[in-house]
Image (cartoon, rainbow, N blue to C red; front, side, top):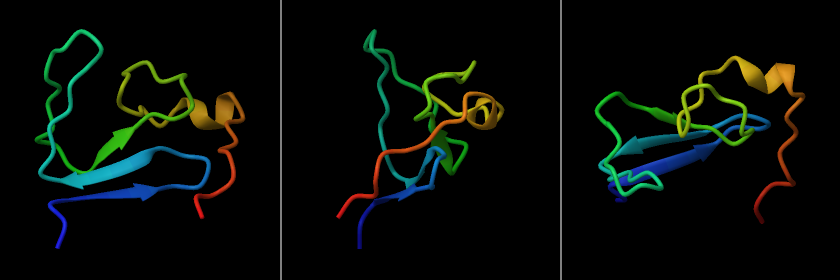
Length: 68
């Protein structure tokens, strides 16, 4: 069994749960204790890299086709 699971929401964030380490672009560790983590895909979150859930509808985010 995997230590982490990533669920891709249609036109929404990646939901990540389990034991992970998340590092930002500056090399600083992000808090991963609150789970599941919702990672932004639309680019409009005010709380990047996390999704704040507000902007997907505002920016009409449409994800690329599903992974095969």
